[in-house]
Image (cartoon, rainbow, N blue to C red; front, side, top):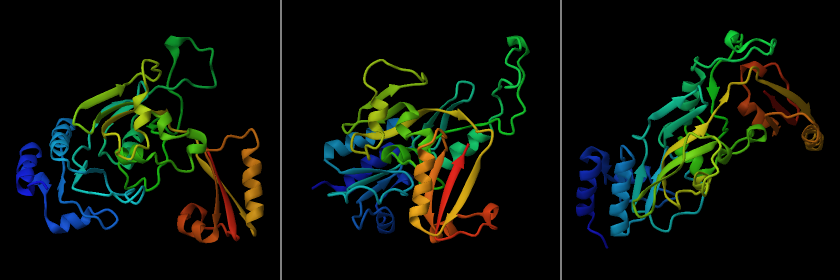
Length: 303
């Protein structure tokens, strides 16, 4: 059995007294399936994460990384939970390189903030599609309505989720039909191993065939292989147009048949989803307020 006070003192020396707590209300806030931790702390960078994990390894503490908690219902209930390591202070976008369509972010950055930042980037220059014979020196920006970029991942709870949690759980929503899975977008990772060593793999090179692709190994690892601290992703320009086509059906069979027929064509929609009326009512916005759904709705996203 470890000495709680001594460990808290040692951890406070690493992350700062104000960023470590054993307050009962905080233990309940960060409980997982009714299992409460004994310590909650918030390191500010990868080095602090490594030092904390070294202490935990030496003291044989069970550690769980925590982004914003939106996916803590996934996975099995922890057998032990001694220390929750929150990543909320690790919320920096380290390198936003829209010219090369890459971004490097810390694990605690919220997914919605990444998309909001990328959507405002105006420094990319696009080739006008109407004239592909123009001399290279005469290229000008096209009249695109959207000149930003985006990270083509479609996680659930995207307004709440941190990017570290998205990658650790391999969270992917309906748009994976077009943009595939998180493992296909990640090209670099910096992590802390269970013994407290800092390890890295990949980088800003989109095509990297040297050695094992450890970056993809961390996708969906649920914190079992280490704590993800930084990630590098490849980006895509924002789509020129984004539309959703809704078709109403009175039976599930009719809706499922249409979805199956769409997937069997040469069309490449961003997403095809079959919703019942209750689910559609929850998800609809003002743009489709005039649509009257039947028992089922097929929603097809086109980009």
